[in-house]
Length: 418
Image (cartoon, rainbow, N blue to C red; front, side, top):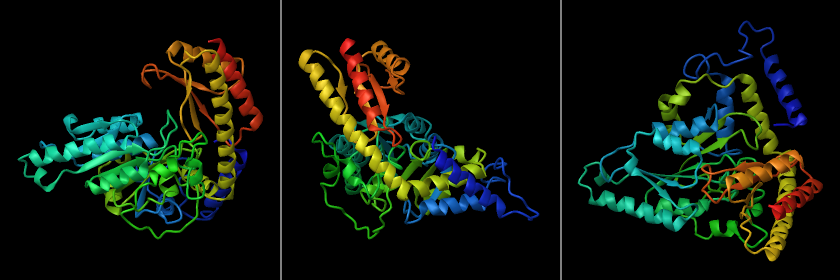
């Protein structure tokens, strides 16, 4: 988002796009889309971009549909699906820590709240317990619809925004497949960060091996895709884009891609359905041409040599930060065992230090921002559970080792004083 080189690439690509229409009697709209995709806002540029995003070299799905934001995309999917509400019929099972856009999508859905269930965060056994209960309710029901089996959608994120941890995607998909459910995965924080070329970065240096846990169960399918592009997300890192239990994935552009919008990747039937029934899509003005060009150029960078260089760089910084921060916290706890500070086990660039109490968390962040000129943010309850307030730290490829050392030293100093 702040990269001048990327800005130059976008502007060059946009000028090239406009040059195609020089001398033409029908100039494209250059400032806005002029309307919704179902009216005047559709374009060959948008359709070409969607075909590119669905292609084997990117998200490798049958089709894709661009939305104005990740929030719109999640809301669209969950609010528009034609759920059945008879006892023992359709259900949604949701990880307890999913993003607000997914929560609101479920709330706005046609599904009765009694058919919405939560499972403990990243706990596959608890998810299977909930799923089994849903299936048993269906068997007990006298509903003619339920007799054909419930349609159950499991909703998770690949990388969680407040904890930075990675969902056990393969185990979730495998369990869903075995029990006849499907899975929707929000890849907002996986896109651009993980992919086929850096799955090893899903391993924590302090002994928590997320990657091997995810891959501990044999695959019930075979995917012959051998492309090597990185940066497409956790599904790409684990070669799971064609898993039979995968309903769809949502890839948001406002994080690593550094621009705006989102894409839903899924079956042709799903995309056709969303085009006609997803209200945020139907009734919103489409993204302007400049945004579409920006999205394409972001993917070209993320999936190319520059993306590989940046991913390698950022994960070197993640490793350095975790080593130094864990050492600093251990030293603090040796001197004061009652301290409640904790570095959450995240292998991603999203790092979080638990600082219980809203006031204390805000005070420490204010000090770091004002005195240390460090761009860190307090995450307070009720956004997170009471007692789990935290300092949220995002590491970027434009940071350097000196800045990481300074961050750890400043944070350790203020934690010692508080």
